[in-house]
Length: 114
Image (tube, rainbow, N blue to C red; front, side, top):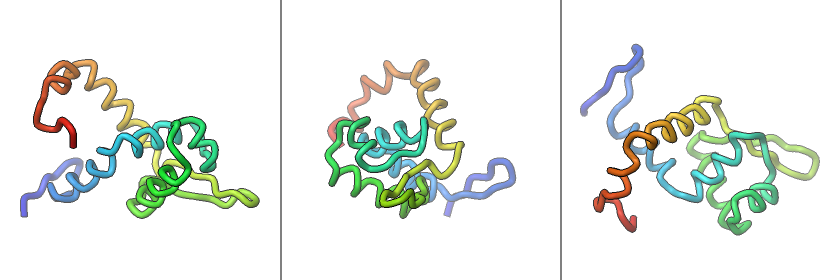
């Protein structure tokens, strides 16, 4: 199994690919982007993302299981938040990278329609 060593931490290529699959869905990215601003409950995520309530709930379950978001009870609601400030940093870094490579990404046919 191929490994990458960065800052004395070891992660497999497969682990990295699995993490990026978590970010690869537009709905999950929309939810994570909304949560970067502040913790939110489901109906607030529905309002901010334009996604349906069942869609938000299903993606939150996935994000929770993968450790990308955490939840806290807030009265009768559950408030969701990103699990690490590094997620917000990663999304910001992706936007900065897109400033450089967006033309190539847009022109790439390898991932169209997936």
